[in-house]
Image 1 (cartoon, protein in one colour):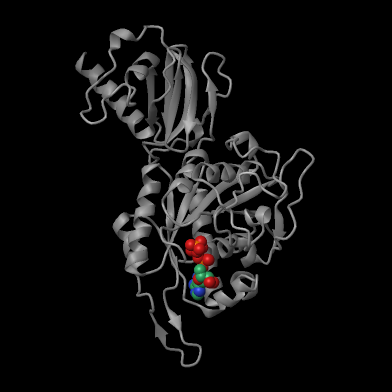
Image 2 (image 1 turned 60 degrees about the vertical axis):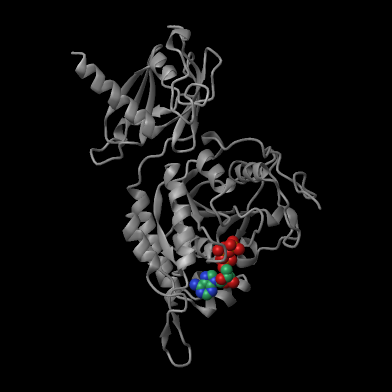
Length: 415
Ligand SMILES: Nc1ncnc2c1ncn2[C@@H]1O[C@H](COP(=O)(O)OP(=O)(O)OP(=O)(O)O)[C@@H](O)[C@H]1O
């Protein structure tokens, strides 16, 4: 067995250990993940063709083949993988350029036939490197083609990158829908915006007699989008030309721009662009030193709107040394006393997991306890490094909003 923890080929200087930070990807407007639950439903095909359809709308687009263990994007785009990627003098990987798309894939480091054998945590680290350690330049959209499943890679992404959202690909088959639904819930749990569902391989039209057959049944994706109240982006036909053009490195959107498939991709791309135009503002990842205010995440008052989300923060502010203010997208502001936040820690050391019994004795927490650092956790939480050495609590945005509401209710009761 070989492991690619240390690749035979040249690896970018950017350490795979380093997490993606806002400063390291300043030119990327939207990162969109394309996921599925089940393998083989056409996720990579959709990633490539969606990227091309976005490009045809005038966008600058890149793709990360985040299917680190089974990279297939270079093959679909006709990118040679027998040469190592070029590097910038400061050690960043230069993406391959094909059909106008910038592309990075594990296959460019290991070769197509050289399987990457990586343990879960390493997969996450390589993924971070593929986003943060690449010279992307300015991009409107960076598409991440995820591996199938709802495991480590998906969570790593959700937790370490400011995703604008995820597109879920499914076939109309019951088994694929069931797994896609599970994947979708996982993303919802970690507060990743679900941009919508694409049903792939819906109807096959016989090229000889013109008869339509729903080989994998019909409409399940649309049904699921209604049940879960997420947008339905479109249904792609089961199209033999998708297979041949994909196998030959000429994706259908580039090769047959007037085909039914290409037209559906164009309408999906348009729907996504419109949706992202109005998308909730995503704060960039941050590591914020409390005392010096260095790395403060920002306060985007202009992004507040009455119909905005109650659970999406658009600002964090050190109002004074004892007060952390959070501004929510719906315009509401919560001011938290930092000691109250320390006392509200829900980690296993502070709350007994099974019974919910409080283990933390407030008397043991000094009145001057304060954060040393506050760090973002994906798009769904923050974590604190406290002056008393405690640092294991994760405060989800849901919990923080509820905490603010509780505090407000208590102060009304006390009046
Ligand atoms: N709409 C379609 N019509 C016909 N064939 C399709 C369609 N979409 C994808 N395919 C074919 O299905 C196969 C699997 O597609 P693809 O590799 O994109 O799936 P995937 O979900 O990314 O797979 P994996 O789980 O291995 O990452 C490919 O041969 C591809 O050409």
